[in-house]
Image 1: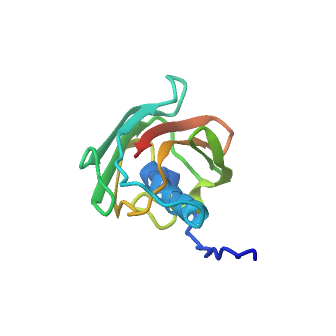
Image 2: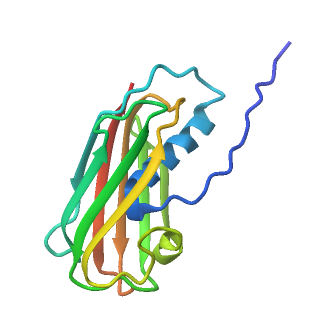
Length: 173
């Protein structure tokens, strides 16, 4: 007799790359939903790290990211803050690309309208040139899958010029 395994589909909101940590945690929720019916999860610990994957030609300069606590645990609340200086404004027609891999396997590669994604954040479009700070609060899912998760968010302005690139890497245990 073959048993059918039930899986529950979870409809998640579109990730917001302006605050890539939102994207990460939405991705973890998505991954938990996808993998949830296939495996039991170990006790998850996040080892955080980030890098600016842009260069001096990008519109966003002086990128800084902080995560508090620095190593949040499953079920913990976190605060994610990003700040940078825009040399030009970000306006309607800009795009965001989100790429996610878990254990080296691509799980997301999506390009969407940036202003739509930012509409309900603390920094909606248009974003004026100058210093920008965004703060996001959330909770780490208790059933996050294990493995190395790499999340990259990149923005392009309405003319196709590079604006911002943030890459986060987490070792989920």
